[in-house]
Image (cartoon, rainbow, N blue to C red; front, side):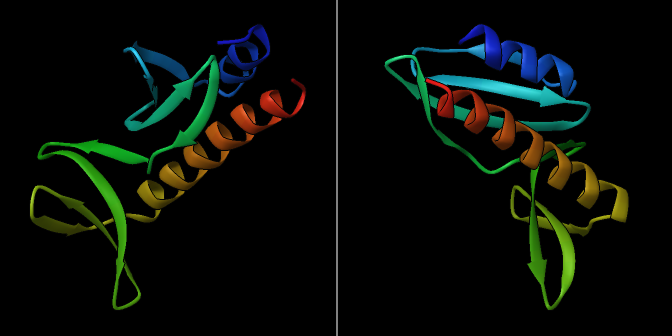
Length: 103
């Protein structure tokens, strides 16, 4: 990971929680996302989710309602959870995209 990406993540309060051969896991608060790397560059960012008592839950929309879907169950998402997931996703994407554009 480049120093620019590290600095951007730190400025956004996002931490790299784990790294495997081709993947990095990023977290902020209860939000989590995986990103794929190839040749030192991020090639894709997976969907962001939020950690719940049932595990990782993804934000889905059902009949216009925000829901958290985890392990075959769905619960209604709060406005704060929706905002947290959206903001985390946007900050992670913007940080990684901006740094890759400067390469």
